[in-house]
Length: 190
Image 1 (cartoon, one colour):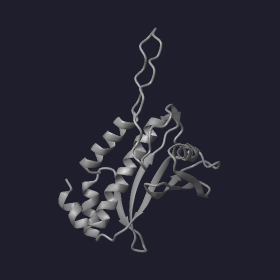
Image 2: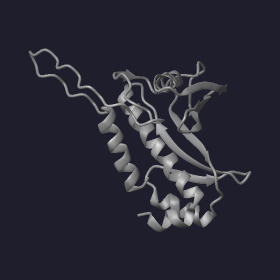
Image 3: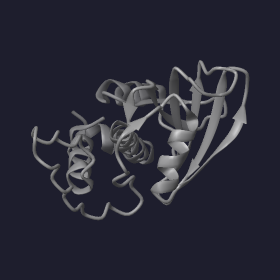
Image 4: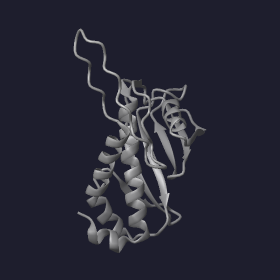
């Protein structure tokens, strides 16, 4: 992920209030939460906070529903669940892996989005070296994709999930710009 994407993510957090709330001082009534600005169109906005078992695909689906996107289980196998997500910002899939027989308790998730354009292998390698979080590849059909992996925990929070999804949005935006014009993108990459 580029520096400009990290700065964009920080701006999204500032605008949406998607950071951990401070604990109230002892023996005082909790302060009222600050009002949050409206999120940028198409981005995951502020989501009600609190615990979130990110190992359960239903948690991700609920977060996307709350943000105005459509997310649904597309396929389920013995130890994996595939969720299809569609929004004004992007369409992508989330493959949950290492799940229990009920399709919960998953250990990891792989987010995958296809991009327009066909970068060369050398250009993909350069993108991957310049990105801290995102990995690009070309599939067997010659289509460019960007990936991001997540480790999942039962004691996670919705705020953390929103942070991860904002980073994913940065991956999609960066890789889309890269895939459309790899030469120009790499010329300005760190």
